Length: 205
Image 1 (cartoon, rainbow, N blue to C red):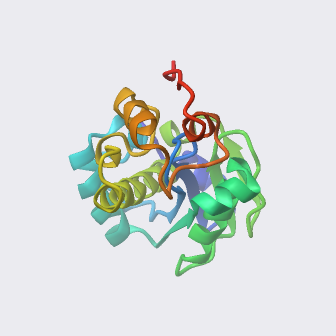
Image 2: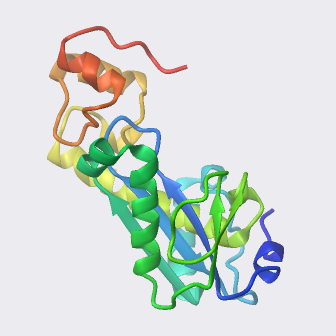
């Protein structure tokens, strides 16, 4: 289970940073940033992928209520296509940190890439399973992005965004082949390019 040992070893206040939505074919990328209070970590905080959706929704509320500071930031489909997904992810992270009521002195970032953030960065591979702050950030990013993609299901019906959230699920592939891409598809991504020319899309493995 994630704990606060990494946070205690860094100059504070320390924020955990994580993203959701680097892999999908549609929709923005989202980042969360959280400074947890060591004595007020919500019970059950963990890697968002390990937490059921209903529990994530409850934890989102608890994290926001108990954290010293938190922020969520997005980078749009247009920014992903213009900058590339890595740079767009960094942009979303900077926006998440900028949205915080308290500026962090240090950031723990999930993964192995040191994004250009407004404070020193320590990368942590598998960080959402090690650091409670990163895990909390992963939950905020995941819940915010999922909520947006559910809304996009009403705006762009027929694609199943509420279910697959823009990832390359079979139902998404079928809809892309049948309907063609919509405005929130990442037009520079290979499966979307294939759909634009009417070519067959190979399912993700």
